[in-house]
Image (cartoon, rainbow, N blue to C red):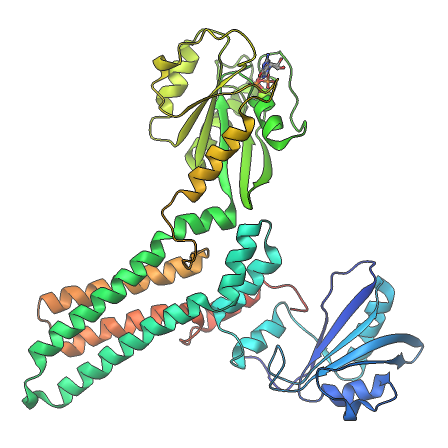
Length: 452
Ligand SMILES: Nc1nc2c(ncn2[C@@H]2O[C@H](COP(=O)(O)OP(=O)(O)OP(=O)(O)O)[C@@H](O)[C@H]2O)c(=O)[nH]1
Ligand SMILES: [Mg+2]
């Protein structure tokens, strides 16, 4: 565990030139440290909490007119006394102020140390802290919203309610074991089973949101696939609305995969353009083609591109057969030209005619991709699980609850059933930090940046 009595300091704003930089200190004696370096009309020791004071930061040869604010424990982000200086931005000045504060008694904060203190001092739960990380790292609106919901404690509330129910069950078992003469056992078995089944359903419902959560957090992987010259790179460019990939009428133009992200209606999509599938005529192309085939495994959706102005080829048929177990949209490209391809031969249900030349149906294709992600029958206000750590903990909890349910079915001794219930309680506790798993805690806070 951390040494809670030290004073830590960090530059909380990104390093670089800017209008303002924020340097933050947290610890028991930050007020007296600030007193040595900050001078305003009011003495630092008389500062009213949460009020911004204009003054001068002065230490050795450093001087800056800046602002200072004091948050009194426990009403601060970390739960300790906390002071922030808002000085003029710029790498040199910010660094000098930071070094001055180290000189007068602070130690540099580690990654995520402020948030870790907040957790250790009971200000936030682990999952709320992870919500903060998600907000900082969010690249799309949906990711931001999910991070905000997590930070607000939606998941925490759900998990704690489930833990409370399990605690009640453990208490009930205790009573039954302590007073066997009361003949409560049969009734206890039944009520435990009812309650466990309800908690199980809640966990199953949460886990059902995980796929959607992954799409929010990691983005949806879309592989643009098909034979050479079908217009795959052109489709990538059209979806991105700029010319990212080289397009020519030479077969085998794209040799390596090209990956780009685009946002649509707040969701993140990762587009991957690939080398056209055909019998390669050199080693480099062959490596590229094998890479395209490998990418198939991890794709969420495949956009199978064909040239609608040409007959279906044997390469097209082979490709169609390799996509049978995939979420596939057949993009019949070059709709601006006379269409002769008999697309029914390919046996793919989802078909859209597009033209990268005229832009026909490109927006409709985006809409199809969006619907693929959002048509998951998930309530708009549901808590969405976006974090693989939470998924694993929920799965562990589910496994333990299933064990308990099976044990009840077999009328196994109540004291043994309580072990499974206690394990389920601990697995749920790993999500919020309401268990004592120090490794998880260290892992989470190492993902933060310094100063947060
Ligand atoms: N008329 C017409 N031509 C298109 C359309 N889309 C692509 N093309 C042309 O088709 C040719 C091949 O396009 P690319 O996008 O390079 O095809 P590709 O599938 O990436 O080809 P490889 O990288 O070789 O596998 C180029 O000459 C494009 O200009 C379209 O919608 N209409
Ligand atoms: Mg290409």
